[in-house]
Length: 369
Image (cartoon, rainbow, N blue to C red; front, side, top):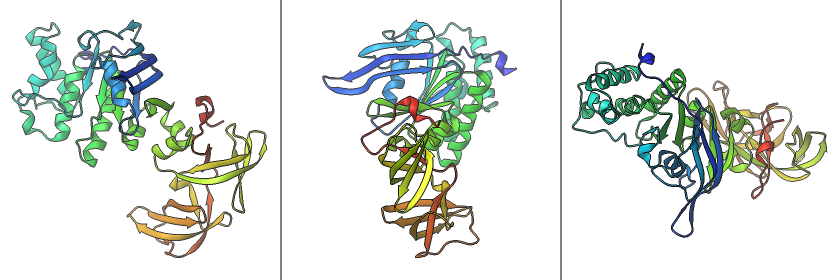
């Protein structure tokens, strides 16, 4: 079995008050604390400039922390060079040697790790089999598709049996269909071998599809950490709600509390949902497009401004007094008409309260009760 020749040595990763500053005052990572459990795939997600790639590079030893500690397993690696850390990194650009065969690329790192030539070849062939490239060993990178080249880069990292495997935007050079296939391959390999993987992307769908946990970063800090379901269903604030999948941010007023339940007003419409510890006053409802109910008996008044057929569903832009919303509906046989007046309501588990702009819940209150 391939798994008997390539084994994971998964280790946890811990950041303790880690800070990275460039020059005198450019803060790239601002005192973050982070625990990645052994055998998990954790994604660092956020917009450009939020600090996610710098965080990844500090784990790899390609950047050094200004302060704080980084531990892999029980070893403090904060000041260790990249060559002394038991990690491997898969880059966005693949970084394959164009003059080497696929087998040569995969076995390259093994030659510097003390393996005999025959053992390195066997291990490299096992790695290629694992990523579905058995029989491709004599080809050059230029003879492969983009997805195949990415798999070679993954195999090259896997054969080193690292404690931690790092991915830096690994799918950004692939088209949509290949991205889906390769991300499924990466997830399957990670789960089969029980690897610790830290994965950087700015693509929300990609993060939701592959992760055990997602760390959303903003302005060099962690905005929220949780499972894909926790972040999608219970975002901590408007930024996370809007960044993790699409969300309509609807202004509302918390008019009264009943234990852990809040009653909110949107115009004359009243709706009850978990308060998440928030007090009476202005707030926002974060509502996913698929959880908006159009044309029911209850809700607030709105008008269909746009209606778009996209094959498996209808997409609507709906305008109410406070602004526009985006909604989707599976009924493509009976579409709503542009200009049609409708009631807008929510699924029973549809909206979640988030604070108004400039405020935020504590991480503990960011989850559904």
